[in-house]
Image 1 (cartoon, helix red, strand yellow):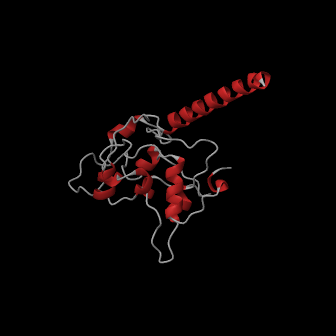
Image 2 (cartoon, rainbow, N blue to C red):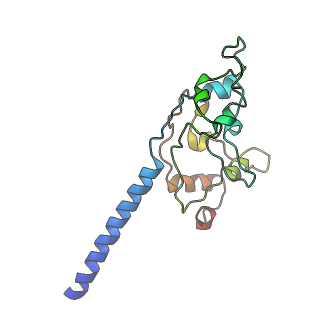
Image 3 (spheres, one colour):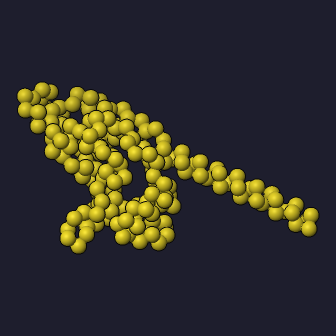
Length: 182
């Protein structure tokens, strides 16, 4: 009996410590304070310019989420050769702060990166509709009220698997493991 405990106790201790380590690593990854080298005002873009989330946060042809925009995507509206001041507040003006970046640069970092074992399709979630045509989900469901935000700070706390599953249940989306995990 003592001999079997001699082998089981280290295994239990190792398993417990591994669980704690992996949980902390996941929490750390999901809650990094992302570097934001340029100021950004969501409220202005969404209300004053009439943009929506998909204007800047687009999808690749295969449906994968592009994430944060490049400087080239910003300069489609904020023309590098445009006017710095415009009396019409609905017209995007030139942003001199973009001049120090190449078109391929992304001067922002995301707050969270999905762990490799998780697959999340923004396009699938954002295009899902009820039978009457209403969209099942909007950006604010996970990201909070960005339309009222004047910064790039994180509004909602960390996204835990339980929150994802609660949302899946509410929206009648399967909670089977293979829906999100490869």
